[in-house]
Amino acid sequence: MKVKALSRSTADYTRETKSDIQRLPRNIDPALHPLERAREYKRALNAAKLERMFAKPFLASLSGHIDGIYSMAKNPWDLDQIITGSGDGELRIWSLESQETMWRAPAAHRGIVRGVCNVPGGATDRFLSVGADKLVKVWSRSEGSVASDGTPEAVATYSGKHAFAAVDHHRNRSMFATGSSLIEVWDVDRSEPVANLTWGADTINTVRMNQTEVNVLASSGTDRSVVLYDLRTSSALAKVVMKLSTNAIAWNPMEAFVFAAASEDHNVYTFDMRRMDHAVNVLRDHVSAVMDVDYSPTGHELVSGGYDRTVRLWDAARGHSRDIYHSKRMQRVFCVRYTQDNAYVLSGSDDSNVRLWRARASQRMGAKSNRERATIEYADKLKDRYKHVPDVRRVLRQRNVPTAIKRASQTKHDMLASRKRKEENERKHAKPGSKPRVPERQKAILGTTSK
Image: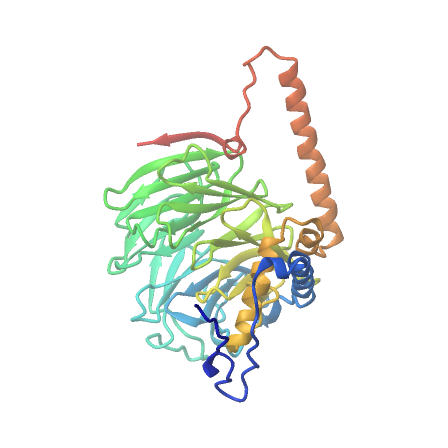
């Protein structure tokens, strides 16, 4: 005969410390919990409401420039520093921890500073700047000398024939590329370019070197083209012509062949350099030209700044922004960057301020206990599980945007709907097969060329 006895170990219900909560036995049999789904739904709705209630993305405004901020660079080897260049030729290095200026060059260039970039490697604090005065200057806080009036002087200066619009440094070689009426590749030990790259554009808007496939360079020009070059052979690889010009390019730090392009047609396009005949994804929510774009260090998210005075954050796999940041005084955004710890976003606008935002609007920084961390993870899982329910979806998607943005969004929506309706009517009354449907990922591409 079998005898079943009730038994339990003291280790199952005894607290390890006085601060621990009491352990209670719980039977997880679904038959004993008929209202479990209703409770979870209520918890998910409350978690969504709390997320929006505590969403306060704005952290600080770094003021000091007296003109608009049109270029920005982050240092991958120093989380605390950010470099900005303004329209009056001033350069500043900011400390994000103290939110103050660490270094400044009041008259670094005559005219607007069009581009700045760090010298990679972490072994030096040098960085480069280019401007409309046809000069490339190398700066350093530790190596540079100081003039009689107390202003810092450049470590080295390179003179070009045209006004520069962009600059970027190679990841592991002592060379950098600039964009003007053509792309010039420079060696830091020479006073003249070592190579000139051009393929049809009158003016180069942006130049970006791939930090993983280090021999690949991407550029965009006023002829609406995006061109890829091979630095080993100093020749072009591929060219794609868009309907409107591209303002900025950003390479994915985790996927070497993927890059994002910020376009004048209010969209951000992600491309795979191996197949340029269509976009991998189209991110569409801006209501004006997208001026800059940057990937997060994880490669899963992007941040973009637009002429519509907003900063938008995106999931790289989705087509609409997950959040929108704006403020009453922020003007047109010309540069945006993700910080290297994936926790903050920086934006520079033509109201002469650098703004610091949270990458997650409701996330709070600082150490968390195991219990608090488990609660946050449980709430995130609930929101993800019930995000398709109308009430939860409505709360999670609700954003208070300026009236001008809301009206422009509605106008843009009506225009696109009208255009689509017109195309369907034309297709309905045309000869079968004469008007094929064009995928959205190919509509903005006029043609591609490979060499």
